[in-house]
Image (cartoon, rainbow, N blue to C red):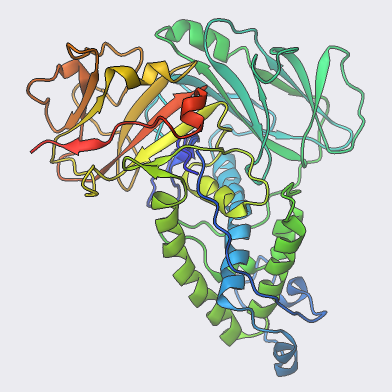
Length: 487
């Protein structure tokens, strides 16, 4: 599933760093992917735990295991290593994001951050909504009281996710019709703290959760800003906040290597995974971690397999992780993944904080109708027939944004035009159809109002967002028209 909303690929996560350094596409982003089940192999391990054999997070050196200890740890096959790696990577990507967020100036848990409206300094930004974000932290005695303002006549949602990237709730009039606004008490799992009588209880999956709130701008920045600042959070005391497990910073091109398995149990235990197959996958992680800790040769073997898995995973993410129709990848279910940990990791990599398909479905294009990489030196068009206009398949709004590759940031241009949506002054053809053009300069014969500037001489990517999509989008019957090169 591709999630591009802050994406970071995807999702809609604001990043102050480049793709090459750390982030992927923030998306929210980002949509669903084809479910792929990796072949798995049985792995037998000894009673020697991975944690006992691994070094502390403060020491870069590996403890020298005995030959006897190494012999007691069975070697997992390639499929088992890949499975374990991709499962744990889903959690590690969220840990990395929390570390990055905590590094921002003025960061504090349980403090709502109001992102500036129209700020394009994100990875794959969503310029159609006013954003709020926060990291919530609770303990058994200390809930957080979260307040949502009353909003009418425009799209909004308060999306709350757990530490594996699973959506816990979307607070809005669609998902919470009996209480679409007001006070909500976010509580620690299985806890029973005293709560305000006017607060609705929402039980988190662990001691932390991520908030992404969106309010549709709808051509009214002042009104959106006022509503944006109506979201508030207050901890009912001073919760004991656990630190994030130590994870070395890594980029999205190479990803983390065998060190992902160092102190694996600490990473696993840091947050509950609600996936139905969590126990079996976590045991697979422990088995690979134990083998990697058994000696330098075993560690090198695991790392070599990871270095084969990473490019395969990245290629899968951008070309096969979701249905591929008319040269767009996207469409389907996201936000809650069941046993499909691979799709969850794709989402966390390509568009962290992906939302459910009832809220948004994303489509990503990096190839034209001839399967050639989109190139900013060329000109293209996207032609929607009159009976397949994007505004007819959504109940909120649609938008398309163009970003450069590989940084996934907007392309500077004299018009400061980075996206088009159903509020843009688009001009239709005489037959009622809609043409959107892309290129280094306006395309002759098509109104300049319908043009998105491209980065000349560089590749680019398109993200098409459909908010509150109708069933025709969810089933895949509708998707954006192909991107056609103009000769």
